[in-house]
Image 1 (cartoon, rainbow, N blue to C red):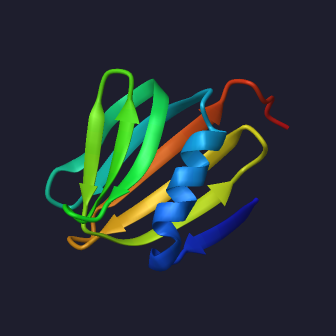
Image 2: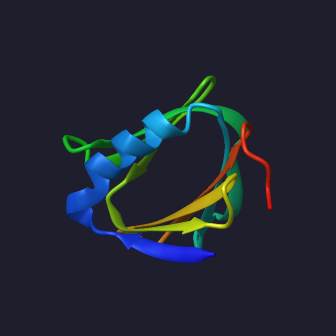
Length: 110
């Protein structure tokens, strides 16, 4: 396992490339907030893409059924557990943590 911080200047290119390479991925999104507690916003939905929207200062998660915006991200970390499982952790300006769990259906876990 390796964890890497994605620098802000890399976000757009990283998510554009990531979206193209992960067309057969299921995503689960958990929000951890001191105000509302832990909430699962997306559960095992086919990922359509991840995109940085510079106008609204957000990272948008697109699935078949739900679009979810993460406003004002401060830090983004990516952990590759193995070939089929990736975790993306986003810290926003309010110190909420949003965790994307991604599972590629075409690759087997080690």
